[in-house]
Image (tube, rainbow, N blue to C red; front, side, top):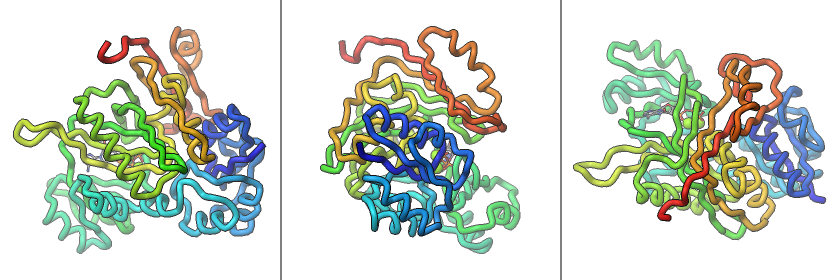
Length: 359
Ligand code: ATP
Ligand code: MG
Ligand code: MG
């Protein structure tokens, strides 16, 4: 059979490789860290740097298509790979989503709402940006931020030189969005432009890290439709192939109008807030992604019930035995050895069957 190439060896890559195996595919994972959770379930793996041209070329020649679970690879990586195999999603999706400034400009260009933002390259620019956006506001590095890392609040009385130095690189300042809820939309687009959306995820964070995802989200049905439309506009504009995630803030409507959606960021991949689809939906996001990048028909996104997905972070994982004893709980562990604080060790999904909406 064919082999799927996966760039990145974390739990997302691991679950993509498992979905590939279920569909009769082999997988070859490329990652820089010899201790990668995805290696244990892949048919082959390469340990090399994302800048190692020879290793990238050798890897790409063994696979039918390359995808990724980690978007912060150098732009040249996708270019080198694409000489040997199709890279899906394409390099433009990578470039757009790995830089918060480029990403927000792209979204604004599509007429979509984002937090107000100003580019900040140096301490002087931060002072001007704060004069524009006010306090509190949030300084974020343009690149490499995740789980709330690479961010600093600008509060009343914050010393701007200290705030800038705490990140020390090209950043953007964002106005604080007065959201009532955080949601994410997970969609898939096929090689033929076919499109499927999952239902909207409602997300809660603790210490900057996703803690739980619940469905159905407590939003108006029109908001749910709007979210899918927005994600579709993004996917079409990028000529996107694969699973795409759009993180959004729900904001109360102006003057009693309908609630609005402000886009926080996009992730060109499967996403932690979509883990519930493993067992909670007809087709998991991982299988959906494999189908999409292989050019196969997309699967149903039907949801099986009311969902709670809980991340097992750090020592949370110690509860694994009692979770296994719980009826209706499905436990997923990533095979990581050291439960360091803040490290995602696994997740548990609880599905409660519910009558279909409208019935
Ligand atoms: P992820 O792990 O999702 O990639 P990240 O490190 O890229 O996270 P963001 O998603 O930008 O960080 O921000 C983390 C969290 O901080 C958001 O989920 C939200 O709760 C809060 N936040 C970020 N930006 C804003 C904003 N402009 N206004 C209000 N809250 C915000
Ligand atoms: Mg992010
Ligand atoms: Mg985020």
